[in-house]
Image (cartoon, rainbow, N blue to C red):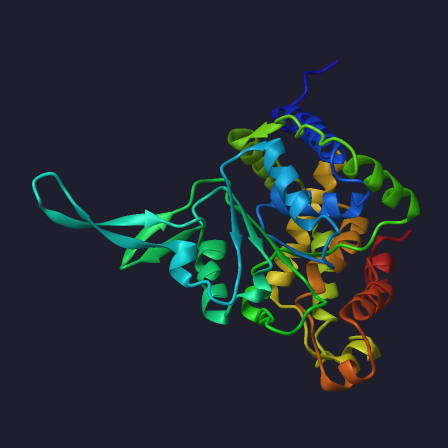
Length: 341
């Protein structure tokens, strides 16, 4: 029997680590398996995640639990209308030395952590929201012409409440596009609600054990990038994103009618990265067509912009994504004919 390759060893380690991580999170979070899995997709793929759900569904608890499970530097930013960009990034402070000389020293804000919780991000003004843009995209911030890099791994988890609209500022499309995934947190069923009541109305449970440290998270991300993707799967992702363009004559009728803009290049890149993370969590070294379709909803739901007609008819972006998956074949007819007998 031949010795396993270096990639096979890394793949096995990644599978064991992700299984332990999900198990530890499950000790605190009841149900919400899809939400936990999608959040881990973002962590492993090296992207950022936006969690949307009504109050009290455990969004903040999920992030805190993930922080407990990972030996990473954690910070929480509570977004409010009076929050300023300097409250997020930091500012230069005038410091007086022992010899009475004065100089400016950069005082880092809470964004300079490895795991950042941006709580109720849609309560802050657009000016403050935009303070996250450079950090999320470049993993660095520029203050007074000087670039300050983040410690890796750098992972932003933002939450927003879709119910209260008064006093909130919807995220602009440019910032939404910076999130690899938008995860919608639904309410629990009766069994999960009962278990939540059992866990939360008695004595407090201890936090979960540490599972991964920074080096192990970075190793997971490297393994994720090594997951193989065949050209037909890449072409399927490209066709899926291309069909979301309402100006594409081959896109389904619902997309042409309900959308103003489709997903762009970053959407296609995010599809492939999230599919790689999904395959890694399942212990596979390659991406299947089903991985692309399974990650399509959280990857694309915040990147499709509805038209006035789509909004008036009550057609959601999820409705369009489901239509795209139904309409776009994994292997076109010409490919099938070429590969046939």
